[in-house]
Structure formats: C-alpha cells, structure tokens
Image (cartoon, rainbow, N blue to C red; front, side, top):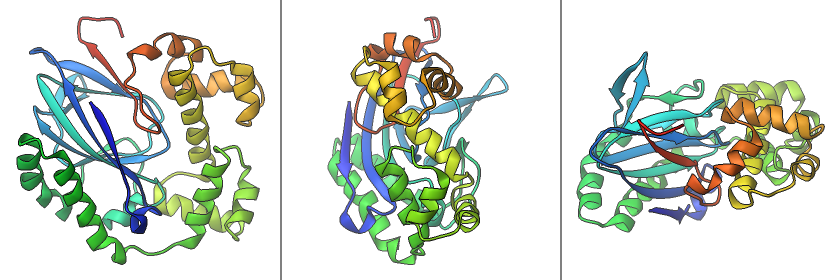
Length: 275
C-alpha cells in the first residue's frame, strides 16, 4: 500500500512530497530492495524492525534514519508488518533542512529533534490515522522551515536540472543558476556531498527506471536520445552502474515493482527466492 501526499507550497523548494507505505511480510525475515533515484529520503518506520546487513549481520536501524543518494541498490530486512513514513527531499536541501553537516550518500543514522515525533506518530499509525500522522510531520517542517537558508543558486540549478531530466551540461546549469561552474560545484558539494554531474546522472537514471517500470517495452535507443546519453550502450552502462542489472533484465522484472510516480522502487523478495 503506497500513498503520496503533496508538499505544502512553503516546503516545495526543499521537500518533493511525503509518502506512506505498508508492506506485509511473512513470519520469516525477508529482504526488500531500494533502487537508487535522485532524492534523499528521511524514513520513519513502525511495526517490526527495519534492518540492514553490515558485514553479514543484521543491524536494526533507528527511526528516523536517512537514505541519501545511492549509487547501487540497498537491501533492507523486516518481517510481518512494516509501515513507513517517508519525507522525499531534494539532495541539495536535505542537510540544510535538518541543520546537519552534509555527508555522503547511502544509509545514514543521525541524531535530531525530529526523532521526538516517533512516539506520537507510532500511536497514530497503529490506530490507522495515516493522514493525521503525515500532517504532524508536515507541520514539524513548516515550523522549522524559516530557519533554512535560502540558497537561490542551488534552487535555480536544481530546477534547471530537473526540467531537463538531468541532460543539461554543467556549464548550462551554472548559467541557469547565474553562477560560475566553480562556485556552483562548490555549493553543490557543500550542500549534498555530490557534484552536479553525479546528481544529473541519477536524475537521468531515474527517468529510465521509471519508464521501464511503466513501459517495459520502451525503446532504449529512443530513451537514450531523449535523455541525452551518447547512445544506447552509454545508457545501458549507466543503468547497470546504478541498478546492478541491465535495462532489459530490469524491464522483465518490472512487474515485481511497487509502482508510483517518482518514488523509491521497492522490490520484495524472500530470502530463499531468486534475487
């Protein structure tokens, strides 16, 4: 069960949307895969534990935790009932949003007053008041939004990158942001931990991934042309880099995806099934 909730107007420069998922597993520990996209996610979870494998051992994650930009799929583990509230953020705003130093991507634990929402959200989720729980999270960020620095350079750059699906050259992104390439790259690195080129590549990958989820028979050569790849081989290399599989194999397995516009793609699988 996947639901998305629109971000209030005041937050749309930092938060793309809020979302809720409920995943039903069996009694045995099962894995689900999070495929890279071009957003950072703040994750609250409820019900059973949500764990990740470190050196072969499962380690329970706190609530909330963050999924920064990914350069390959990540597998989480849970069983029985797992419910999730996600805050989907632009990667160049998420650290300012939380008042934290920028870090690299991947799964990150962090200490923050936001965690004080967990007990109240847990009660609301367990009683089925999903919209009220989402409203609590929205209100928290509305209350703290005024403390976030307004970096117009990053906002203009991010908007230009998204409008062109990540196909705009760095020099043109800098022009759109009214900044030099050097200044833009420095600000991007400071705010997200990644370069403009890194994020643009993920935006393009996300567009291909979403298209293959919705239309497994999509023409890869046409996609490569439309999204600014050099050719189909370039698209395939980049796709395998981020997904760990070829576009064709991903398309064949697309029916296993839980589909929704611009979201983290969850692929459920049991431990004894094929990956």
